[in-house]
Image 1 (spheres, rainbow, N blue to C red):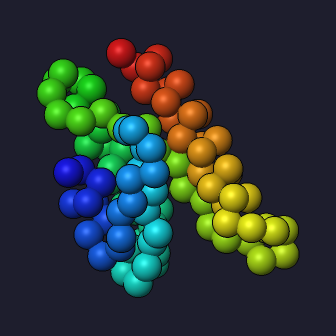
Image 2 (image 1 turned 135 degrees about the vertical axis):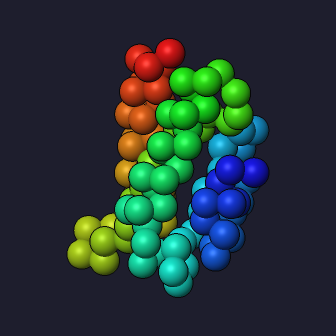
Length: 92
């Protein structure tokens, strides 16, 4: 699975039919921007060649000054995921 290979130091959870969440830890957290960029490059390549998984993604980090719950973090990541989904649709 593309997500597990990309974030191989962190747990991946299935949270819905085709939705997954990753709780980034250790090296994955430290390298989150580079790993997300690598994931998105692979997805763009898969889209271009018409093979392999195409997944929209979003990333959010806990902000202790503003986040009241994990749902706040999840909602920001979900919003980014929908923006990425729109970008991917425009590519195809």
